[in-house]
Length: 392
Image 1 (cartoon, helix red, strand yellow):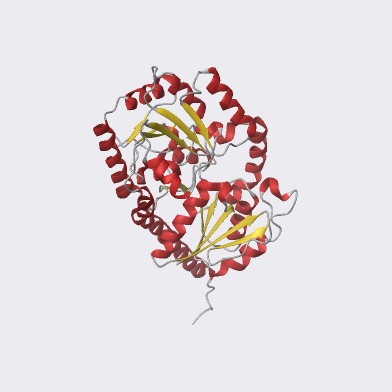
Image 2 (image 1 turned 90 degrees about the vertical axis):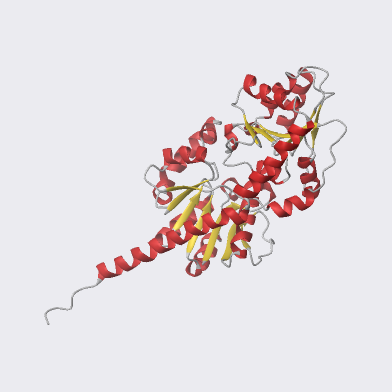
């Protein structure tokens, strides 16, 4: 089976989707399937590889919606060898181009919105809401012809069904390479002063302001510090967080740190008291999966796409100051034995539910089913086109 993936931006700037797609491609290849990714890039000199080919973006007008003049031809050249197309995203030119060409050539495709159809995504900016509404009017007929719309969580599934009421929706979470992460996070050394950890882009959708307000409710002196690590979505938003920290009197207990990568990232998660992710809206949090693989307990909200588990690996608190500050207060009172029990449960959850060895089989079943239905439909169409040759 050959799967052709399309994503508007396959780079570190699009960390969540790029990470998930890279690991999905690796898991499919290990299972014996052929995978290639088509994307766009600002610079024309991105070298093609056995995994990904880039079409250079037009400048400056191409940057706004990832318009690449050569993408259509690149996609058309790759399409005949593919059994199906898997499109990631909703709003950008490569998505619409790939959907239209797939429809034109009767090639089945899957659409993975990656939470881009959530209520928050539609409503958080008036200007963007107007643009998306206009785009949706002319893109929807092509996108609605997806064989399957793929959701990462039951929460995202509900949002998708509002926009695609007649399409089959399949829920399959992102996976995590547990063994690779665990190698880097092995034998963590707990610091003298424990800390709650946040990791990710500093953006309003991540719920960082709720985290600061909730942490400020902990009684002083605070036994557990708070470390917030990640690149800011804008200098203005980082400045807003700094002002908020000073207003709440958190300067001695909270640090804002740059993004952490590689081995250091996994040790940062593994050595935390708990990883705090009060997201407003995500398909399923990649950082949460990495934290599980690092054997770190998680405190999060329903917006992360995760669900609570019987062993307490994930504490799911409703969004709101009372609920989330209560969850932090409870976690601050854990004994080391309690924290260790939850950490072990977190690792077990990663291995048994989110490891790619478990998750990739669901993707393969979805792909096989779509290909089989396309072949059956093609045979039926061929029979319908047969013209009787006349009397015998």
